[in-house]
Length: 468
Ligand SMILES: NC(=O)c1ccc[n+]([C@@H]2O[C@H](COP(=O)([O-])OP(=O)(O)OC[C@H]3O[C@@H](n4cnc5c(N)ncnc54)[C@H](O)[C@@H]3O)[C@@H](O)[C@H]2O)c1
Image: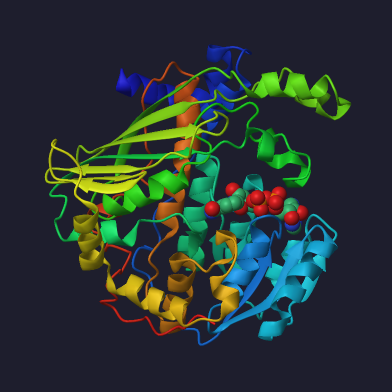
């Protein structure tokens, strides 16, 4: 059965549409994606350290809700020079440039045209492009940046099809430019616990993106550029935004450096909320007419993954239901962690006391987090205040610190590709009655020997870059 399906996927670029029928273009498209070429590994980016940079010269594209914060987060790190900013809308570029002027940054401003960001990437005096645009632009922008000698630091998800995942891997290996995703990452305390055997053998993890985006975000004319995020929910039913839940689990489970995701199955509910909302809004405002009776994604998606070493992962994705934000779980042979609320247990009799919890956190906080905390506490107001989008994350800081110290990065392109691949794979599985589908091995066998990233105890050095 498994092999038959694999053969089907291989030939589906030719016969897929005939077999499936016109009923599901999405299904046919995904089948084509599954049969993407597998490029030979010419260079292994796992553990790669790019030549040391004293100053990291950055260009940032996409200055909307998130990107305006990205400008401030990166500008708040020692040794960063923000040299260029780009958005379609000139006022957004000016606003972000004004924000960081007090820190001495005088970025050149690019705006107005869809392809203006390419001019920014063409410049020889940039080291890194930060990408904070709508999802469909991430891979083209990462690839172009790397082709032009820049590291790519992209918002989630790095890619939306298997073909795009391979493009990122192949380009990063060929150009020796890093391609990593922002923000989503392991809780460093838990990662330290995993590595010190606190959980015993890991058995199972659960992660999710459960965040009610219905009215305040997706059906809100003011929120996203050209309604991109609502449109992304049309014609694709699966897990569309996996990284916040999946990347930490991948890091705990040594995915791509000791284990690897083997296959997944995915199931989605119907859409009970988005079309109803579109109809209700359209009854009062014609603007919403084009969103009525569209093929919205099922409101809840559940995807289950098995790793080669026999661990299991459950991922959930729901951006419409009226419920509090979801949490994650990590379960091993000796202990369990749950994130909402944060707590640990060693058995079925209950969770550890608050006092014991605090002792555990203190004991297992790794060196990198201690350094980051120390620098954050002594930083000026710009770094510390306001919305979380404006506060430099440990991921931002580690990226710049590693580049400035000539160290391997915590993350790599294989993580970006594997954590993005669940999107097309889950869509395929949902549209095929939850049949399982094999996970591509973006490392092409190197996962067995790849070194771990996430140097949370600064064993290779670093920890020298301050926050401003
Ligand atoms: N990691 C997190 O916690 C987190 C939080 C929020 C958003 N995000 C991610 O950030 C990204 C952006 O989300 P957002 O909420 O800021 O969206 P947004 O619509 O507010 O911003 C997107 C910006 O990109 C610009 N843009 C679009 N096309 C462009 C082009 N061709 N050239 C230059 N600029 C262009 C738009 O003008 C807009 O300012 C998404 O990938 C989203 O998933 C991540």
